[in-house]
Image 1 (tube, rainbow, N blue to C red):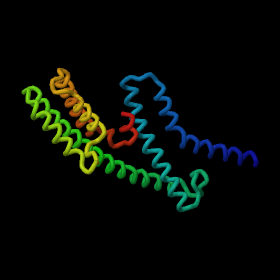
Image 2: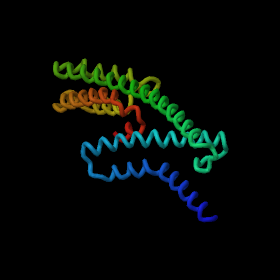
Image 3: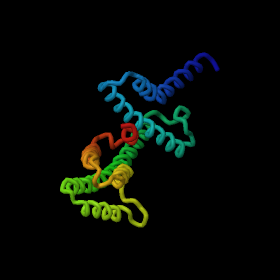
Image 4: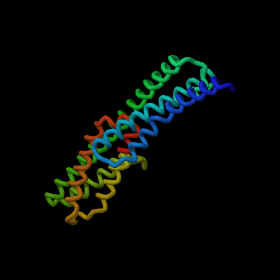
Length: 207
């Protein structure tokens, strides 16, 4: 390899190294910095960017391999315009997938939260009115409703709330506090399902 070929190889390798690693190292730098509101916003923005960037890049590599037999993009003989066009197509496909998947998941979670919140609010009414019989009856009725053929019809958060509710005795003074706190928490969860980060898998996991 002569000196010109060496420098050409070095420049090409360096370019692809930056393309593959720059977003990751930028995110890593933000993660190790001291947390404040401004840094937290940057972390979330960059985490979202890294998700769509690397998934789109990986899909581009897969489709490039299917069409040319070359997986690593720096080894491809295709021009940059072709690779970029394929990258943005993959980006669009992934965005549509995430949007549909997260919207469906978000709607299901919101329904579960709303159902549990309504249940808790009715229990609060019965507790404050000292209606023990109605309280116990509602708990039993709701349990029969959410468990169909041994399959639970609630998400894990709501199921955990329901199980904790069952453990309380009606005459426990802490019961009313628990019910009100859980009702407020579920209301918060319903509102957060509308936030933009639910359209990102990573932001939804690390929120």
